[in-house]
Length: 283
Length: 283
Image 1 (spheres, rainbow over the protein chains, first blue to last red):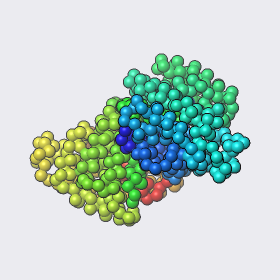
Image 2 (image 1 turned 90 degrees about the vertical axis):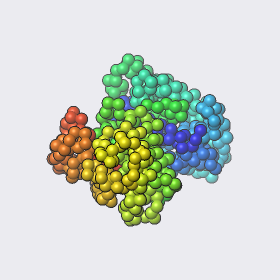
Image 3 (image 1 turned 60 degrees about the horizontal axis):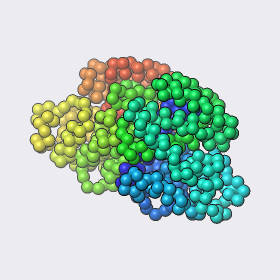
Image 4 (image 1 turned 30 degrees about the horizontal axis):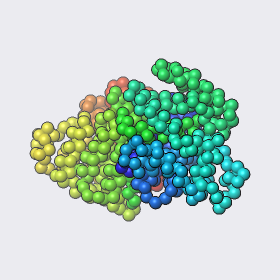
């Protein structure tokens, strides 16, 4: 698929994700976080465009180097800190794969080949991106401890993701072959026909959130909090399907008040919108 | 200036313009129009990225051809119709100029040279873009009548803009050397330091609106309506400067209720944000 088409789908995916609302717990067009506001996400999504395009073109460099460059552009263009670390980690292999395939049917298989090939150099770049982005996630421990510095890395990035998949949804997508991202894409494409793109993104987000605990919440606030959010999402999902926004808005307020932001689920939705746009979704 | 830097500044300029609020009378993150919603503007802003980049690279083609290609990408990526016709008409010469100069000091002079050189071929492309975009503005009359078809064009685009400058702010910018866009850029850069990017865009918009009648309103609703909006903007501008948002929100409601949308002023603000970002504004 043509690189500029791929890059535009990815950039617009990031923009539509952050713009959807009511989107429980995360930054959206109506809700900022202290120090990180909606406009930081807009700037970051545009900042990475050249990196997305080059990744789709298949120029030199592994997936780790593209993630590092994406984070580097993101933080150079806005002062809100880590806006898209997880989203880039998920999107870049998909973007690279999209640039390599003739049609969408091959996308998933190719994305798996990209992540399987992610080696030690990619891990070093990923660690560098990690520090640069000021990411707040659970550090790897023991022999994988980030604090030991990048010189001590001797495991490939895919292997590291296998380790991290125990506590991180994005890592789980890498290891399992992106099932959540493709499921979200199907949901979004279908719901967009019925209710428009805005509600489709919210609906897909709630479905993902109701499916399994958000690992960004789990890392920051513990498993109980993540389970509470998951159950809450399941409860409001039914109302949402019936066209009632109020309960979702209430749920959003409760999450914001408790500082619970389902960042990993949002990353998956960004990837899902990207895949849906790539598949021809227009609105 | 590097093409991908220029293109990102232009794309982000479009996004920040449409996202600013309360922004009296126009589509923003809180207000859609029937058939044209906020997401259409997001999609259109991303859709034109490759055209912006190529215009900055200085590849073949005059300013008319880049405007035509921008409109063509915009309508291919979203179904909301004309989102950015005026903004593209204003931005493209500035983008082309930015790609040609070493530093920002030469930007204004170079942009003038770009528009002065816009000839008959550019006019033909501009007319084509006009039809494609489904633009609702005052048609040229008599010998410039668009309805006579593009084959009858025998005046250059700059000359057409001189004619249109009587009733169109964007044409006036072309003819006068972009004074409003550069003034808006200065306002935005200064206010962003004090109040952040979001309020800076709103403030610059109100200042432009209070300065002279918006010609998009004038064309659609007449001179009295445009003067009424201009005076109203002047009245709420003082409150805005003192940090009071409520009067601006009320003014927004009044404009929306009367269907008065100051599209030409918004175009100038997009160009202003672009120039400010190009000059190094970060937030």
